[in-house]
Image 1 (tube, rainbow, N blue to C red):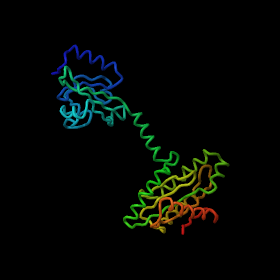
Image 2: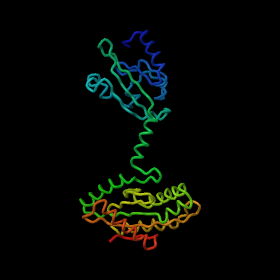
Image 3: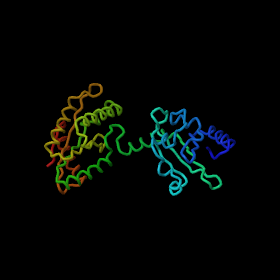
Image 4: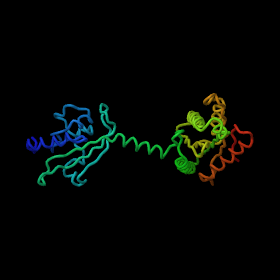
Length: 289
């Protein structure tokens, strides 16, 4: 039985129905006393008879630890969580806030407030992705690439394993942009990145470290192994018909980590090999000394 009078329940129901939030009133046994229509829509249910709040909201078989009254008060006045909405719901993510409900300092139940945070979550995920990846090519951005490089070099030293890097630069890319425009150039970069990703392992790290300059980290790979992959990529790019049947080539510099290398010196050595490839006629793979 509810600890609330019929008049109080009617008043609460009217308030619930006026709000653009999912609202529920739950007793101390975790049974639903009142809900509004939006709450039912969020959880894709019509009948809440004999349903416990922890079963419906969190798919649990027992009360959530923070919602046990004596523990709830230790946590604070509010418990807040973000959850995935049920498959049948039109929402994707829901923010659930639970409040202890006291009347004259006597605990009477819980108030649950739910709102759709799908768009907010989508924006957060987009911002997180933008902080890691180059938006055009999907490669890691320069900052993240160097963080991975430092971590993988440390691991290679610890376990005395080889590590190699490749630096790629699309030949005459400025001429491509000047001739066909930047949108065309962006399409070339997108297709180039796709070819690289299709030829490297999941353990390899692909990053964009400059305008048309990219790099790959090959963990546990010596220079000979890196050369095989780099040459395969070079050949596929040369054979590939880019937008408007345009032919594109790439120059590649390779370097294997030395004991004294830092991330910056390792990339600098690969860069030196890259520019040697450029000076030697382009469209080739050159290994650093």
